[in-house]
Amino acid sequence: MADNSIKLKNITKRYGKSVAVDHLNLEIPANSFISLLGPSGCGKTTTLRIIGGFESPDRGKVLFSGKDITSLPPNKRQLNTVFQKYALFPHMSIAENIAFGLKIKKKPKSYIDDKIRYALKLVNLDGFENRSVDSLSGGQQQRIAIARAIVNEPKVLLLDEPLGALDLKLRQDMQYELIRLKNELGITFIYVTHDQEEALTMSDTIVVMDKGCIQQIGTPQEVFNHPVNVFVAGFIGTPQMNFFKARLVKDGEGAYHVQVGEISVSLAESVQKALNTDSQEVILGIRPEHIRFTDASDAFTGTVEVSEMMGSEYHLHVACNGQDVIFRVPTVDLPEALRSGIAYGAQIRFDFRPDAIHLFDPQTEQNLR
Image 1 (cartoon, rainbow, N blue to C red):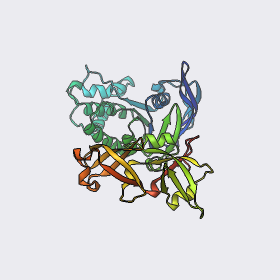
Image 2: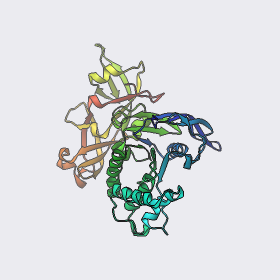
Image 3: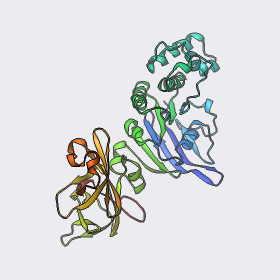
Image 4: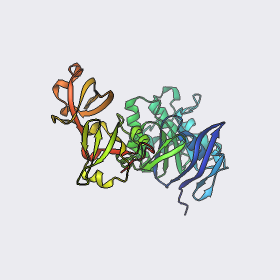
């Protein structure tokens, strides 16, 4: 029995002198939801197009169920793709759009009609068969594009930033719908996005990419809580992680602490035990939600420059020794004096949660934990 897994072996793709994908190796298990995540130009869409057969790699192989499909055209692969631009035919009804691929395959009318009803029910658009494309909202058009892919019974569904054109509420609704569809269909979803919230919300596994290379592969929890390097730490999380130049110092009893300017920062025992370095110079990383207000005299001091109300939380930008330090604070924990315009110019003291500190090698930018 075929396992329907996908393996990319040593994939390289160039466009002129530019390397889009560089010696990429990746195994995608069957029935998983995997997101290729990274900034524009990182190679994620090129990787997806190589899987789908829309691009040919300069080197390497694409294996599906253990078979080499590198040279197969898209219509010969058991894969279907949903693009950001849904590519629906405006002169066709919804039913005709969904049936397009099945008609090319010369499926009987009764079979096609059953598939249309099944797909529309699956995407919660029962009864839309005779509607025109122009009468649909963006979210509904996106669902029709998914329905058109589903009726072909793909083993793998490729999604290239399909929610990018939707507003926030529709994106959130469709994230839920995609998770539901994945669970109901039991097929592999490979999802390309530059939106980390989408990847963290929906994925079983996240592949973080940059400059054509994989930086980290892991569950959303692993990638968020244990970033392997400065790039992943800075890319994952909203707002992004704060970084400080620092020195790692060992006291007379063998315990480590970190010196940031004139401030000594304590490290939790769990952090100290995980350290693997002889380096003294380090980069300290701390997420905005792990910075704490304090009255201690030996803490950092800063001036609030911006206070942003984000609903259930505030984002504060604090100037400290020439650096913009970002806080993420639940509204209930924010002192009244720091809310609204009163916050500007306020002096505050803060420190870091000792167990949430990340330390990176300044040369390799790898996490030292």
